[in-house]
Amino acid sequence: MVALHRAVSGAGIESLLYALEGGAVDGVTVRSVAKLDVTACDTLLLHYSLGHEAFESLARARCRRLLLFHDVTPPELLRGAPLDTVEAARAGLARAGWVASQCEAAAVHSRSSASSLKSRGGPGATVLPYLLRPELLETAPNPAFAARLGGRSPILLTVGRVLPHKRIEDVILVYDYLRRVSPDPWHLVVAGSTDHAPGYVESLASLCGKLELPGVRFTGGVSQAELNGWFRAARSFLCMSAHEGFCVPLVEAMHHRLPVFALSRAAIPETLRGAGVTFSSPDWVAIAEAIDAVERAPGLRNGILDVQDQAYRTYEPGAAARTWLEWLELPERESTPTRM
Image (cartoon, rainbow, N blue to C red):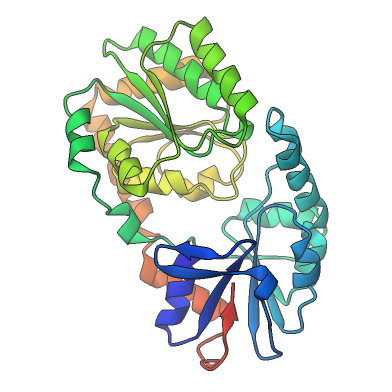
């Protein structure tokens, strides 16, 4: 939202951000949606990822309405998460088609999400590029943090909120096999908030205990600087998620030139754009052996990174911003506020 806000503002168009709770994000003011007051000449862009009662009124706002559908994780993939999270996902899927049908047009970040919206009774959606924020990717880690990681054993990294659909148990099992097949003393780092599904997190800790796995670290929520530090310290990136509407950590991993190993599910192949090493099933042994093979073959590793570099260049922010402005049809509406 911040990236799109800045792109729209940079085009000379007034843009305001609204969320359930007001505040600020990276110097950008976010207003409470309770204070939203639109006029007929406004354009309202709704960001949809989970169900919430606010969408009932927002979808009927008396102005031009557009929708960005971020996709909704199927509730059956969230078993182990708190009930309110599962119910929000269920409600989000149930109402997605209706909310989208109340809007003039809908956008998504992947064909996978477009198909998901269509299956819920929604209209066809335009696939638009994800807007990166390069300044975040370039944020330097704290020197003390970087020094602390210097000279450590190779790190296998996975990134994202620790929720059941991320299939962190599969990541752990790949790591277990990697320790057996590799001569190197690998460590596993799971970078992301552990606050959203405490029962699931406990089950992962129990699994690590049963397997007697050393070197597994759950960071919890981290700053962008610390996250970049982990990306720079790691040797390989692993994603075993069962569902993604678009997977930002894959793009971040490509930016930091980490070879990516991922399960080919939902929008993951689209996010990678043909790069990385993908697997059709969670074959822990095969994936572990692939990670080890790439680590021990510099030529193979560099070849994978070269392809990933090409894929990453397709996310060039300037071109993506122009595509968004064309879809929003805002250049000729320079006096029109955009609410997001």
